[in-house]
Amino acid sequence: MGSHAHRLKIQNDISTYTILPLEKRGSTREGKETVKALFAGLEEDFSKRIKNGDYLVAGSNFGCGPDAEQAVLALKFSGVGAVVAKSFSRIFYRSAMNWGLSLIECETNYIDDMDELSLDLDRNCLMNLSKGVRVDIKPVPKMLKKMLSKGGVIQYFRDMHTLSEVA
View 1 (tube, rainbow, N blue to C red):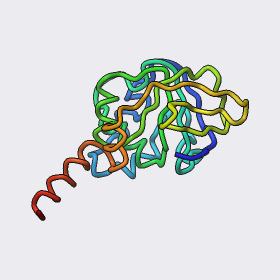
View 2 (cartoon, rainbow, N blue to C red):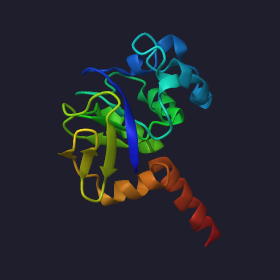
View 3 (cartoon, rainbow, N blue to C red):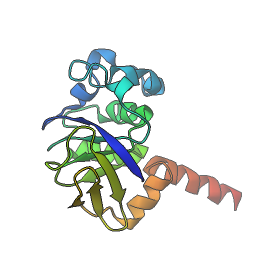
View 4 (cartoon, one colour):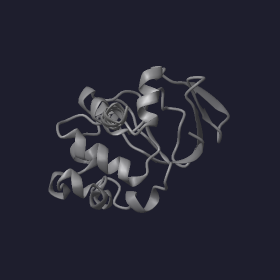
């Protein structure tokens, strides 16, 4: 992942219903349509502000609550390059890995709205280029990096199944 401007900083305990309000949800097949509803009530113009590859930066316990899959898919369809937070709820983390949304765990107090960031997964660090600050990140396991590069756990195993049918 290269350098991208940070677009949004939100508080702790952002629930899946804050990410994608219940009344705005459709089936997961309508995920691209739900992008417009991301953070409705918190950041009304979020979908207009985010650019492909930007980082979403939050505090602790990001993605708490039920129904993580639709929130994850809406974030993925929005073009968010990764969500950077102090911690994630377990169900949100699992759903994000399944669908290939990168989650980066680290201290986020040194990141302000619109800071320029650069992520180096090999060195386990996030550089805040705007401030000249290096932040260590929780290492992403090698196998998980491989799965994320293929589009997530689900796509990784779909590809493996397809390859075994060809062989």
